[in-house]
Image (tube, rainbow, N blue to C red; front, side, top):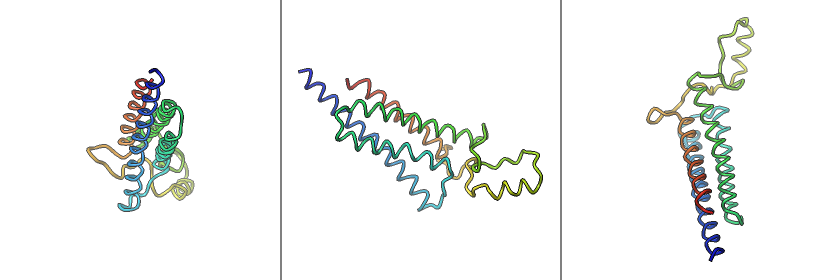
Length: 164
């Protein structure tokens, strides 16, 4: 009886892992759509935010063969928290709450000489992390990533706790 219950719980955990992987796949497809179909080139942080979703997709696929579905949910939880953190970090840069990584934002506040400022601008990528290129319901893509990733982390936490 206990072993049958354990198998059912593991099966449900695996199913939830696959659902979370499908959510990540949808987010990646949307990002790629905006990049190639709508012509919105991603900045450095946008690319960074894609990696956790790729990892979650791989974890969802691995959960099909894994013995411990709950362990997969725990790792997905950890990766979704990282993804949400990256989205929050990028959102803060978009709102000019803090500076982004080098080559991602244009810092014109320094007291550099004109030639140093020109060199800095020439080294800066065309796509800046501190500019919002797209919004829906007043939320940028980074905001949406932070929000959806946080929801995915909560769902993974719920599944990890429930499917014992």
